[in-house]
Length: 205
Image 1 (cartoon, rainbow, N blue to C red):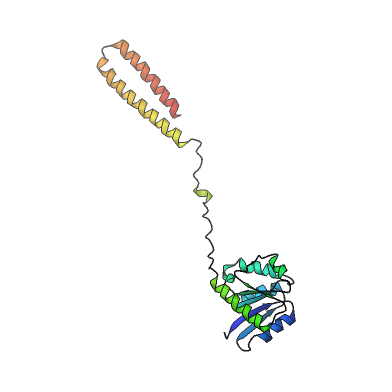
Image 2: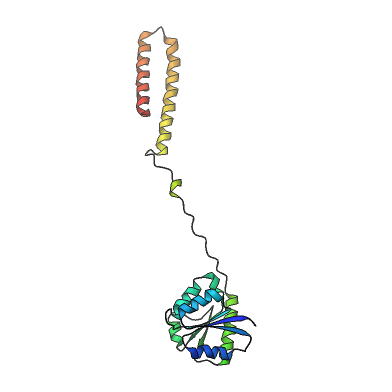
C-alpha cells in the first residue's frame, strides 16, 4: 500500500500522532488537519485514499464534514473511518448499521486501527456508484405560443359553418338559374341569398 494517503482530521495532536505511530512506516503518507474546515480543504487538494474523521471538531464539525462527503459522488468512494470517544454521539446522527463507513472508538490500539482501515476499504468497494441525475428539461418561455384570445376549436367550428353556407349558396344559385321566368320566386330567393351573405359577413368580422 505504499504511496497511499491517509488524512487524519482530529483536533487532538495526540490522536494524530497515535495514528502516525501505529501505521507501518514507509507504507503510508499521513496528512493531518486540526479542524473540519482544514480537513475539507485537504480532501479536495490531496485526494486521500482514506479519511479518518473525528466526530467533534472546531470550525466545521465531523458531522458537517461527513454530510459534505456524502453529498458529493466524487467523495463518497473514499474509505472513511469515523472516530469518537462516545459512540452515542455518532448514533444520534447516523443510525446503525454503518453500511458505507467504519467506526472506531477512542482510545484504540494498533490492532483496532488496522482492522477499521481494512473494513472501511471493503465497505467503500461495495458501495454502489451514484450517478447524478440529469436536471429536468426547462421549456423556454419564448416557445410558448401566444394567446390569440380565440380557441382553435371555435375557429374550426366557424370555418365549418362558412363552408356549409357556401355550399347552400351554390345550390340555391343552381336552383335560381332555371327560374329566371318566375320573378316572384326569384325575388324570394334573392332575399334569402342576401340574408345569408349578411350573416356570413357578420361572422367574419
